[in-house]
Image (cartoon, rainbow, N blue to C red):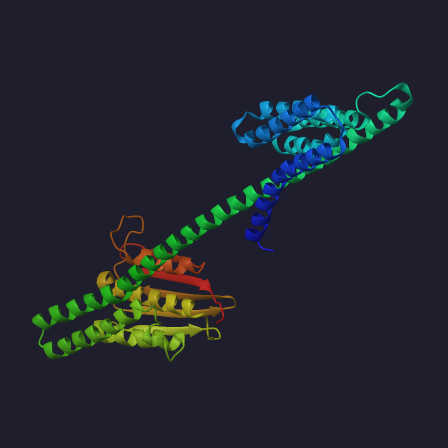
Length: 381
């Protein structure tokens, strides 16, 4: 049975518990009228007390709890001591004591009601010959009433706490869903930012470089052709970025071959030789790992083209057990790592690598070239 069904049954049982109080009072009144011989005046008084009971039960939600419980005990005491048929009405007092009271007051009211029920059974305090039975039944009634009322109270409290915990868990679950959606939106924004920077921004930079070079050199035709090729590639990359597709270099080739293709295109555009070395046993890895390393290589080479003024570049891909490492080194002008920068490249590379529980290390100094090392877990597909 699911939680919704349990809640419905709990509400129904609560209504039944209150309705039974009216039912018991009605049944005992009928038995009283049918089997008790009293004078008209006595019957009128008894029925007036019964009427008071109906009214008191009806207005219980409008009264303070101590006032309502005290009225119930008084009502039952008067009615039960007048006629033993009304002894069953003690049920209602037990129910409300367990529901509305706690601690010692719940037990005091329960015990007092059990005493009144015993007196009602004997028609008042009995003569000496019946007192042993009276006290025995009194002890039994008080013990049973207090024990079962206490058990009912504990059960009710536990049910309420479980319901509160469930509602709290539902609230936390809803909060987690909201946070997950927000995290998903943020992650997608960061992904698009990285893709735009790693593909479109680099492509536009290459196009601009080729067109500027075409103005000042004699090989303008080749420069324009290269710019057109970069534009077509950029358009394809834009479409792939929107749909979160893998880079074209990785569609039909492994990471080493994809890196070699990237290096060939970069060398053709920038005229700087790049040596590519693969160590260890090359193997297929999770697509996200391969994409992250490929994009890291592209960004590192783009930084070399824009800032390093290097004459040589070395790229090494190392498969080492559970880790794969990409190293990109150049002999360019280098830079001061501690100096503030306004670029987005290193931040993008670091985000990509850290997203895969990897580490990005950068070593450089003015005039000493730059070395970038990205290490990520070699997760199998």
